Amino acid sequence: HRVAGTRAAHAHAARCWNYMFHYSGATRRRLRREDSPLPPNVMAHESVREPARVSLGHTWHSCGERVLVDMISGPRIVGGHDAQLGAWPWQVSLQVYQYGVGFKHLCGGSLVNEYSVLTAAHCVRRQMDPYYWRVVIGLHDISRPERHTVKHSVREIIVHSEFRIETFENDIALFKLYKSVSYNDYIQPICLPFVHIHLNINNETKCFISGWGSISEKGEGSPILQEAQVNIIPSDICNGFEWYEGMVNNNMFCAGFESGGIDSCQGDSGGPLVCCHLDTSKYYLIGITSFGFGCGRPKLPGIYVRVSRYRRWIKARLLLASKATRTLSITQESATIFCTVMILANCLI
Image 1: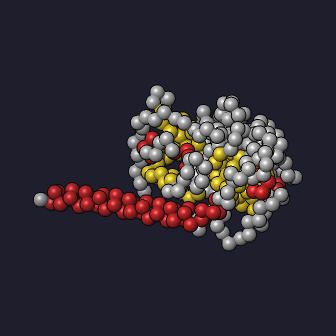
Image 2: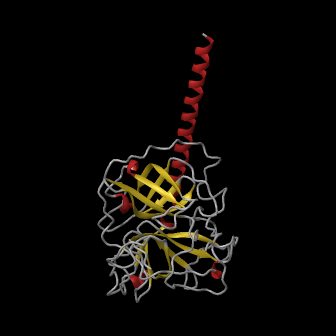
Image 3: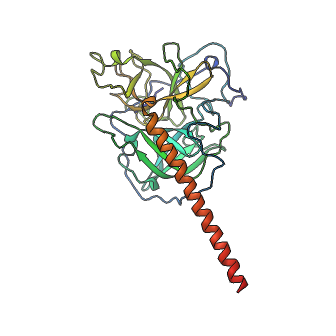
């Protein structure tokens, strides 16, 4: 799908409406999914370490905070500017290996805990082997990694068992990482909308999309992370005549503007649509960029996976991920102890 379109001093947990947001050009999107020739990965898998604690959501760590964004009074939107460095610390680039090219950005994703990234299922339909993928976190300029940028190999890719490419139903997938992610000002998890607070999304709610996708319908992707503020469009309007005419079901929602111009596009698929909860001053992952007709067209806004509808699926996969990670760590530790014992035994013989 799509998104079209300094370093700030540490502004700790600033209120959502005090941020200034920019967006460049008409956002991006896709109705052809990202294709990519597939090749053997040359990257060796990294070793697995036992995490201090594996959280299923953010029980032990804060989430949804943007600590590096300038605080400016008054709500501002759109403006034709790139995102600030560190503005969206949960945004990840999912990159697939291609022969003769190396790793290339294909889709976006959202870091939800130290081992897990949520994205769109259609992103991996042509390559399900995790060996060909890597996750890049803390990235701003896709052509020039920052000092804080980290690259992680992928241990497993879980696609919703009822994903349908024909309708984009259940367009959700989870990437499990080999190594835990260390959080800092540039790398933070996004909150999941499963907490016991009322996440009321209305016209006053500030919601944003971000990504490195095309900045026009048939244009090139942006090397700099782009951002845009969008409106959540009621499904009865989005399903109306001259809009999507019934294509948007209860597991999806539309976001953008009736007049078009601001949207997601090719290369933004799998990326986050986040909304700010005013009472907590935190951002929550409300949607995953899924599909749409063209980019930035009037009455054809982007369509997003409604994350709240997949609470059980996500929590079950995060739990499995944490158990699998601990099992791998224990196995590795046991093997190390066994080898050490055998070496000592040989020395004593």
